[in-house]
Image 1 (cartoon, helix red, strand yellow):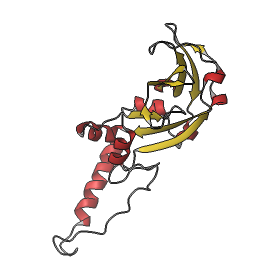
Image 2 (cartoon, rainbow, N blue to C red; image 1 turned 60 degrees about the horizontal axis):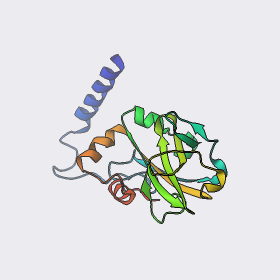
Image 3 (cartoon, rainbow, N blue to C red; image 1 turned 45 degrees about the vertical axis):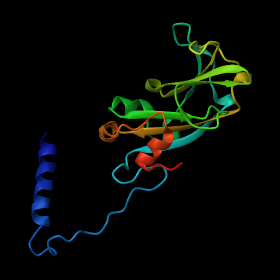
Image 4 (cartoon, rainbow, N blue to C red; image 1 turned 120 degrees about the vertical axis):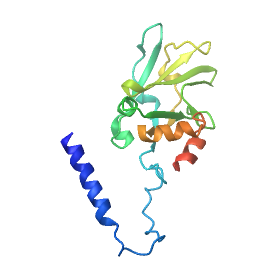
Length: 194
């Protein structure tokens, strides 16, 4: 509390001493600041929103494991190294959002997880367990079940984009009614480039 009060007082004094009658003419604007780096980070006040692109190869998926209720998945743990040192679970636990998009390895566009698709006549579901920072894959026979999937049934390579939106940018996004299922809409809003 003392540290916060001290910082508040320093900020107040800095504001009071920074603006004096001798400083420039009224109505003049200062120089434009440098924007965040294009690419992974958003611009125009969205510098803390970032996106990360990576691929998961067929051999990278773990073993089929039971997740309760007859749900069997293979998992791929998304390490902080793939997310620029960030953690999906920590972003979520701190009040932010984690958006995950994929092409399933065979779909011609990016779709928001979870979703199902067909690959060589086999139904496949992609999902995520954000609290454990895992991407999940399973076979589905009717669209809603999650059954064991053989390694040979998994696409050779599945591409993912994960967008991390911290709490301070969450409210701004909610107010604009962004279509979160559309990666292009999210990328445009936050000026993300992949």
